[in-house]
Image (spheres, rainbow, N blue to C red):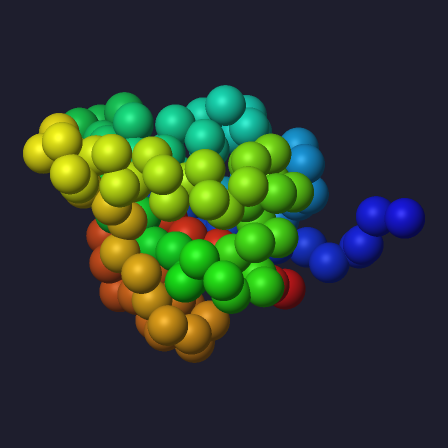
Length: 126
């Protein structure tokens, strides 16, 4: 049975808040619906998509690899295992072709960074 826990994704750049499970739904601050595909979220969290459509940089924040919420986000929203994300980030770092996301230690720190960093994206439990 699927859990009803919703994962909240905050997008500071455009003032969007997302809540969903496998099929993300995005709502702007006025309540209008928009959509992110799983593929787009994968591109962002695998660090392949690094700028928003307007050209500003995407700042990706994640919890530690073994944090239960990170594991859940990777599996249920992105459809991958956390080790697959780590492997992709390590390749970017060690090949010199990219950067890994910023790791925050707590959900409270995640909320703070999302609220204060323009162009940021991350996740918290609702």
